[in-house]
Length: 134
Image 1 (cartoon, one colour):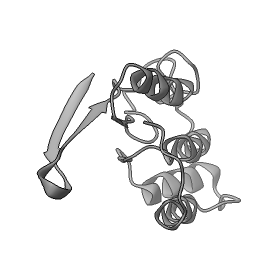
Image 2: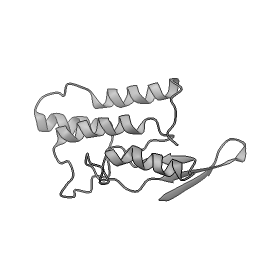
Image 3: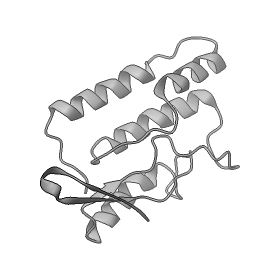
């Protein structure tokens, strides 16, 4: 695990423990299904704040990763949903890039807008008192 250290309100130290890099795939073997379980495990070990890996994974282009742009857009949205209850989120690929790539591969517009979904989740997070996975 990696640690990010900084000072918050009142000069109180805040330490984020970052999950290991994730692959852009669906499975439990270092993919989307390991995001929440990894955060819960680190929380049980006593780490106050867990920083999940980048939404959508790191796109290492491994053989077992999602390559289809439309399927990656679905993975990206699901990853955002899994990460939104954590203290912080980070992006490796901008939502509009995912949207454009999926629509170009498909030849038509998607049934959903990736940018709008990400914005909606982030706005809901700001206004609602969501429990944090920590």
